[in-house]
Image 1 (cartoon, rainbow, N blue to C red):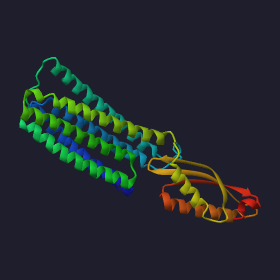
Image 2 (cartoon, rainbow, N blue to C red):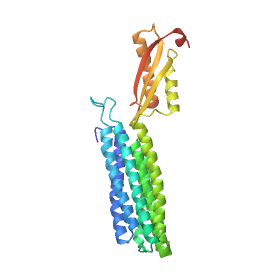
Image 3 (spheres, one colour):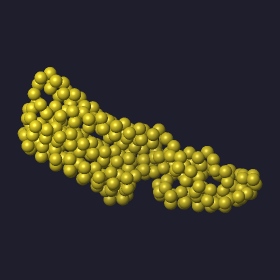
Length: 304
């Protein structure tokens, strides 16, 4: 990782921590589910396995997105990170569907008169450990993701939380079945079904946000207004128009036309654009991609 910037190193570090945790958790939960006769805990362990896959996706796409621009990618490779966020979001939806189908199948069996086996205490202990560990991992990951502006890392953080919620539902069901008897064992699949709905909502929201970036959705209106305010800081600049903005991974792209006095020299107008670019990069980050087109203005445009 010596050639990477601090942002990429932060993403790699937190994702490698998550990967190591998921390896241990998934193996432990599946073992606890088998030994403790809890199908819900086995399913929860499979959920943690899916977290491992998304960790690998983040690692792979972060390496790609950190590559500089080249002949085939003049705007760099930032959108690989957006693609990673979509892949992770789709994985979340798949996990939610898996949990929902499994819980509905268990509910159907119980309604038909089948009896679920009483789980052992080891399964309940595994659920408790998973809730604590995955919630701590979510908070760590989402904090770093927001600090470095990584959509993929934030999506992966929500995958960690979905695992914590899944473990919570599993733990509730196991506790009710363990302490309250046979007729309460239906609580396990009911709680799991409720959690799957929450996972679906998270996945859909993340897909919507990442898809907007991938399809070059404009930045929010308050951000666009701030850009125009910065552009107009120099009194020699008039009538900014044709503003176009979009997000490219963790960076943004800004294109804008400005008008200056037509009698101004090329050197002077170039100096103005360089000053505007410096102000925009100070406000939105050194990686901001900026294109400013200069047009001559009539006196009414430049009289400020």
